[in-house]
Image (cartoon, rainbow, N blue to C red):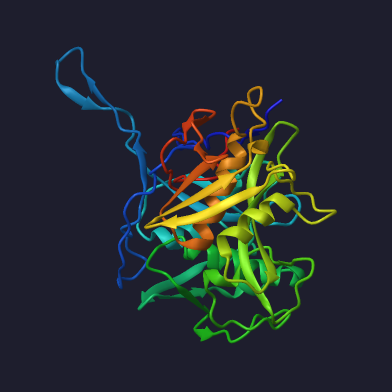
Length: 355
């Protein structure tokens, strides 16, 4: 039976999110030196609960009981295995979009009513975002003193979650952290240095077999965690592989190898799959795979989770806009409800949930 990716997130305000699928769903983004407390231009609006109704007595248009505008945001939470995982939530629209994201990553905060079962907030209970600005790509975040009250084994993961959530915004490249008016040079529990907090630092980092520290290349691939025996979600893992400049080839090979032995993660790309070629054409990466990838629908299609992880991983590491998947040199026609006869871009959201 096919594993199903987790479905829509339904917020308490009654709006559902976009499913994880489809091509060209990322809207345009712009760079800005404005404070992040203001709404940023990368907002993806997901709807409005306002309804126009006609009063049967007067025949005039009226508004329903409430008007709530929402947008979809990516927060980072711990899963049940301790991995830092992106989760898409539908949140009420408010000023300070980046501050709002961090607010929904705090233990005991409003995310407690929205978080999927088995997931936990990463920031210590009571943490407040006292201020946030951005200048020339650096986001400066000031937390309250409660920020220091975390378990030391989570220190690196907290930095990863903050960095990844903020760099979801296109005008943030680097992070600085302050607590009660003082800049932190290192984290208070284990002394992890706080410098160059960029997306390139990685997430859920592990050393690949045969790699030696100091002589590695970092690639981030999307494996899968299991919510139950039928539903999966994507987990980004930064793997430090032996130094190479063949990034796209390595990404595909690491997906084929799958998670490390003993890991709770899986890869739907079976190990007999062979990479037959990779070619970049302008902003499109063309990937040619053997027909071992056809394991879905009586071996006529590829598993949709396989293609999602391929597209997510390749675009994350190479910076291309689109991916074209070939099987034995021919375009893959379809996978599930998604057509692949043309290049596809990164899904707008991943890991959306329903209760």
